[in-house]
Image 1 (cartoon, rainbow, N blue to C red):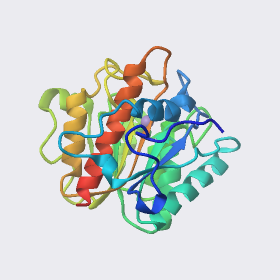
Image 2 (tube, rainbow, N blue to C red):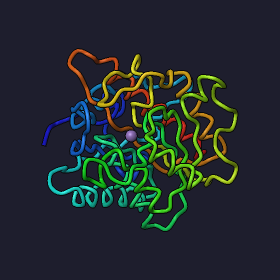
Image 3 (cartoon, protein in one colour):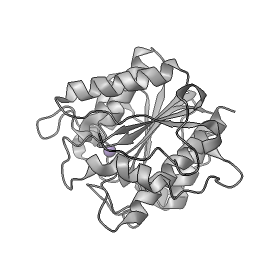
Amino acid sequence: MKNTPSFHGDEFTNGVPADSLFHVIPVPWEDTVSYGGGTGEGPAAILEASGQLEANLGRAVPGSFGIHTMQEILCDGPAEEVLSRIEAATARVLRGGKIPVLLGGEHTVTLGALRAFAARGKSVGVVQFDAHADLRDSYEGSRYSHACVMRRAHDLGFPLFQIGVRAPCVEELDYRQAHAVPHLDARTIWELGIPEKPLPPDFPEEIYLTFDVDGLDPSIMPATGTPVPGGLTWREAVVALERVCQGRRVVGMDVVELAPRPSDHASNFAAALLCYTMMDLAARSRA
Ligand SMILES: [Mn+2]
């Protein structure tokens, strides 16, 4: 087991689980990557970079709510086994009434976390930031490919909202249309910006945020396996996050698909700051 630092461990010592609102679950899973590799190194890179964060974001100090970083999930073996481990770790966090913060790893990580919510029988809305729709039924022979993760989530009955998509395939466009999956695609953001209230009024009050870092533009996030131009600027991402959290309660989150590259510490830091920003919004959403 690698000895990686805890999240923001230079400012806040690794919290006692019972006193920590945020439970960080590193999941260095890299199984079905379709283009560039390296997502297995994502969690360690985010934890490393989190040491460079300021304690405060404006006047807010998200770390003061307590951050407990768990041991990383073992990602060897068949996908079903890895998913079961992710689900079990997430379920423990939920039983304690805390917020799971998963660090990927490939996007399939999200399915393990969502299964823990499904087992609790709660209607949680999934808000997905991504360049891709991830709605294929199967990809390269796998139903657990990262290109299928939101299809699997939708199969489980989770309402879904997609932000920043700009590379959907025709199968995904058809699926979206047939199932009326609401979305705010990159093209719409180019033309109209981020609406005041991005989510449909009937979207669940409790939300899970899944942020595939390729939702960001490659100019600020080149370190990902399948970068696509035309993505969210930093400002658009933060404003969109703030607006989807408005009037809702964040019950879980993940940051996935960071594939660190040598001498690109800017991407790693951007992913760490993104995660800390999401923690801030989650803490505020519970206030
Ligand atoms: Mn994705």
